[in-house]
Length: 569
Image 1 (cartoon, one colour):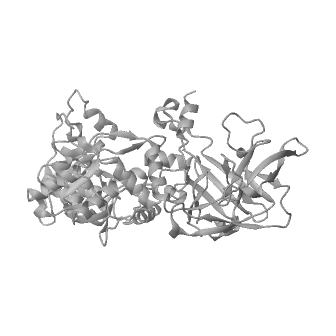
Image 2 (image 1 turned 135 degrees about the vertical axis):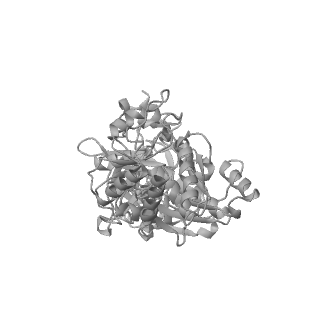
Image 3 (image 1 turned 180 degrees about the horizontal axis):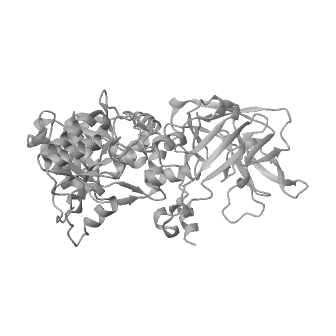
């Protein structure tokens, strides 16, 4: 999927262009996307992946997919597989450059030893809480660890014993010796390695010490020859530490160091009515608030794919959002606009009644069936047409009839007319009720002079509703998905517990929906527009024994405004 990049809305593009003009990195551009395999990717990760891949494509460079698998406790092969599947679906192509941080654990260990030998790292026996207390605050300098002045020989011996498994978890760590008085707390002797006796999903029990992210990430960039390390804005304070690792890697490991990589931060994606944190999304899954990581209500790529969102719409959305230097929040409506914009000229139209009420045309011959020709996509002759059967009994939406309608209700009511899409105008003459007093059917009459395309009645009929022939209707199950949270900022609601703003109507299931006959011809994975209802996706993951199931991708008009209004009352 080729990404068009606008220099005016993408400062990263302008920066790389300047580097190329200055002759940096021998004219190379090499980017990467380094996800942690501790959860499924969400739409915020899509921004980072598409940006890095798009930059490499635009400048004729290279792009790596690298898994940051340095925490065996949280990582699973399931997450690796899902990330690869999601990125391929988005159109991201890393060719043969699929890497794992664990691929280079050996060389990272050697680098750590050289830092120790150079007096730039030491083994510290302080606990995690003690290290935190010694670090100081934003206004007060830190305090040197009592183990800071160990000799390189002693540190090297202790580090090798850590590697051999001589100490329990948390007993010792390897720290960088930088500056405990630095104004940047990230430079106050950060931890480089910790002891962790856990089975790794790739290396098994080969290692019991694992590198920390701020050490592993920049060094891996150096190993892979990454020219531009693009990351989100929360890592801006970590850039001096990134540079410290890169500088010493170039100096101490010249035999493997390929490139002095440069870190550049951009604003992360924030969206209304969404939580974009893998930790919080994991909680949603584990506490049963959703069906799983690929629940169509989730902002995960897998969830969006199962909901039916097309990958082009995600790419278009990321392009419209642009790349900024400071964080902001994007309205959900923009994302929905991009989805509708992509599907408007692609999705075939179909008539589906979600909450049917039977309409009986009393003056229509009982066994007579006409064929109504309808276009598949308006104003697109190339999309063809379809024939829909029309007979004495049809289903219309329950909401398209009202006994005591308000003004400007241009649908069906007693004594009033409405046009059935592509067919005739009908007038409601009688309301039939069941034993409980509920409306069971509507008796209507039609005017033969009002045939669509050949209306000779001379009357102006303002209302048009969709319908499905009762004798030919196909039963459907339709999942109506809405936003998962009622609040624009879920994390600011419910006394800090984002789950308090979960929308109880985020999923409404219609099990008695009726569709026109050709809906059965739509294969699993098809995207259709249900006329007047929205864009829908035939769920390919449900077995055919469960019947035909459609997920609503997006309504024709946003409903978030109504939700926001309710939540503020």
